[in-house]
Length: 273
Image (cartoon, rainbow, N blue to C red; front, side):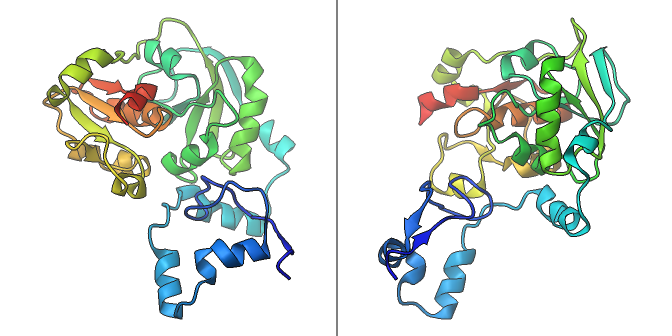
């Protein structure tokens, strides 16, 4: 019946589908009237449409399928298996370092080679980007702002099964060697051609329109493997759609292209839309 309630399994912004509604419920009648899937079409047309422009699949999706088949550890036990170290100024070389602090704090001081995947708000898609940038079973350190944040962040890490490969949770000492310069936004506005611009939005977002015609488009989930495509003869400015992802993207480029000066456009990208 048309008045039968329909509840979505995923919401807007989820990588489990494309163009999903933000509505928390609907009715079968409304879907019959407005949902493209109910219009008259052949099987071939339906398949072509549903497969077109799908979002990328993060690395952790397949990993989590396997974890779910075998059964995950109790989340509380999993959390307390992770070592915790305070006031750290160096870690084991060669391992990834994920710094969850805000972008400004990260730029001022961090462990060299860190990647800034911010987790300062529950609304930020930290789990998605942790599982897209760090590969399943790739060892890494997790930097947290303070001991008060440890439990909540371990909970978020455990949601995607990434606590097993976590080498340690750490807080940082003061006056560390790593830092990034802050972008002079007004200079960038006046002289954009003096910068190499890297757009790290998803391919489907770029297809809807560029913010800068000269930008090199490399999706964030592919960036670690494609930084060699970025020229280093000019300062590099990294942008996304709202300022969250560019913190991670700029830190990846800064880590891997040590000869370059790298800037994060951050939420100033809104001035260019």
